[in-house]
Image (cartoon, rainbow, N blue to C red; front, top):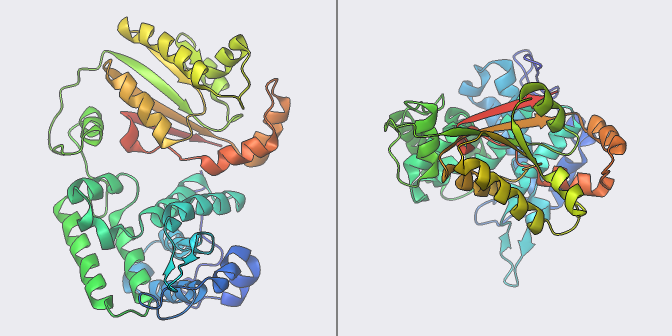
Length: 375
């Protein structure tokens, strides 16, 4: 892990100016923002590129941003550059002329991940920027959530809420709108609320890992509740793109464990990875239930790249009182392509690209333990 990474185009204490000419020449995704209109009721400043520039300038002008360590300044600046990167793809102009961009936040987080991966940004910094893009609007809308307390506590496990507050403030200061004062007041309220819930500049702590896991499995839990640990056995859920090294890691680290491998089942059942996987998954679940009834530890070995799929498995394992550990592995993209060519069950490269686009890196709210093993 590179500990001293900084974004090459981020302003610094010797020169706080932003070189837009260099940035626009370097990044085509940034240039494309100029062709994307915005609803003048909320963004009277103009197109998305104009807004992005104003947001970045507002961020760099914030005294709180300037006093941060260089790496933290860099991830926030990169997030400001990327926070609306998906608007050109998501924007629609309605019949009445209204401009909307529904879904641009989640789509933008995925695009940011791909862009930063291609730029070889280290994993930890890449995922910090992705989280800032994904949760950047939370300070404005957290109070509208069904459970605001749970929303901020959960988010604090993934990204620091004080950093979200800075990005949101820059976002609001970088737009021309009639409700700017009210929006800034909401951000101040967000900061106070996070401080009250002990999750402003650090993740909210829990009495134990099991207590944390139980809290996030429920909608209306108490973060101070010390849950009794009634787990009976362990399940290791592997996660990572094909070729990331899951099989090798299992052999080296869990040699005595039973392994439920979806790849192995596919071979036995003569089912292609591109066919319907329902039969394979059901067969794997049947084996897992046998192990769990007997309280036997095992590894669930599959790509498990979507949060939804991991959540379904987690609920199944939890119903049998499993202690769940997610092990996420990642290798450089060139290495993944090379390993794929060497695999007996080689995937078409376009399929590998689609899997990369769908990848959702696991976070600590999904299991008792999460390990991120990245080359």
